[in-house]
Image (cartoon, rainbow, N blue to C red; front, side, top):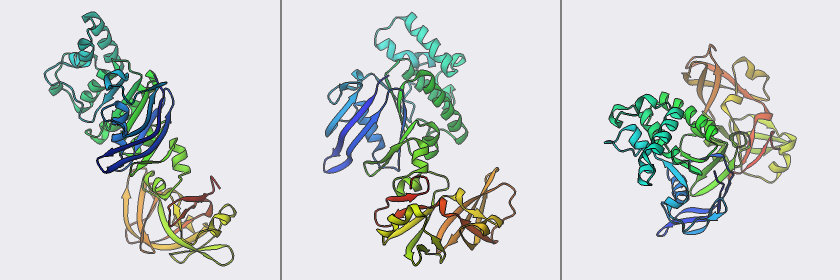
Length: 365
C-alpha cells in the first residue's frame, strides 16, 4: 500500500478550469471518499490519480514517486468502475484472472490467486458462470476480484454501487468496508451519495466547483463544518436555516420573529457580521411538548409526515422557509396539526450570510 499526495493540482479542458489548486495528503491504508454534487470534479481528480487524464499543473506523488508522467499500468493501482467492465464471454474465474494471464502468470498461479480472491468475496460457487448468469451485486464482486487479484498499492473506485438497488447497495457497502479493512489497501472512493461517504470513509473530501471545501473524518465534517455548503450536504434531512440580525441586549432577531440570546462563544463573531444565518439540524429540533422548554420556540403547521419505521420526518414551514424535524416512532402528530417547535442555543450553528463561512458552534466555539 502507498500514500498519495496532491500538491497544487490543476486541471483544465481548454479554457474550462475543472480543478483548482488541489492539496491533499492521503496516508497509507486509509479509506478516502470524494463526495460532492455532479460536476464538482471528483471523478476528474480520480482519473488524474489513475493516470487516465493528464495533469495541467501541480505534482502528484504515489508513495515517494512523482507520477505525473508515469503511465497508468506502472502506477501500481487498480480501478473498479460503475459499469463493472467485465467480459461477457468469459467465466467469473477467467474475468478475475485475465490480467494475470496477460502478464504471463502460469495457470497454477492464476488458479491459486482466483481461489483466494473467490474465498474473500464469496464467489467460490460462481467461478464457472458467465456474467449474464450473475446478479448485479455478483458482477460487482467479480469486478472487485479482478482488482484485488493484482494486489495493488492503491484501489480507485468510481461510483461502483450506483447501478445496484438500495438493498444491494447497503450489502455491498458493508462488504467493501470489511474488505478494505482486511486488505489494508489505500483506497479512494468516488460517490455523490453522502450516506456512502459517511459510512465508508476514514476521511471525506467534500468537493464543489473543482475545489475541496473540507477534508476530515465523517464526525469532524458533520459536527464542525467550515461552511454552509458542507453543513447542508451532510445529514439526512439536511440542516435547517434561518436568517438573523443582531438585536438589543445581546440577542439575535430571527426571521420568524423569535429572538435568540447570543451564546458567549458567538459574541465576537456576531459583532463583526451584519448578514447572519443560523443553522439547526433536524435532530436538534424539539417538536411537541418538549419544545416549550427550549431556548427558542414557536408554532407551525405540519405539511407532511414521512414515516420511516423507527422515526418520522416532520415537514413544516417557518418564515416561508421549509423546515424538517425528526421525531420518534409513535409520536401523535399528523398532517395539518399545529405543533410547537423549538431548539436550544447550544445546538445552533452560526454562518456568515455573505460568504457561507461557519463562524460559531458550541462544539468549536
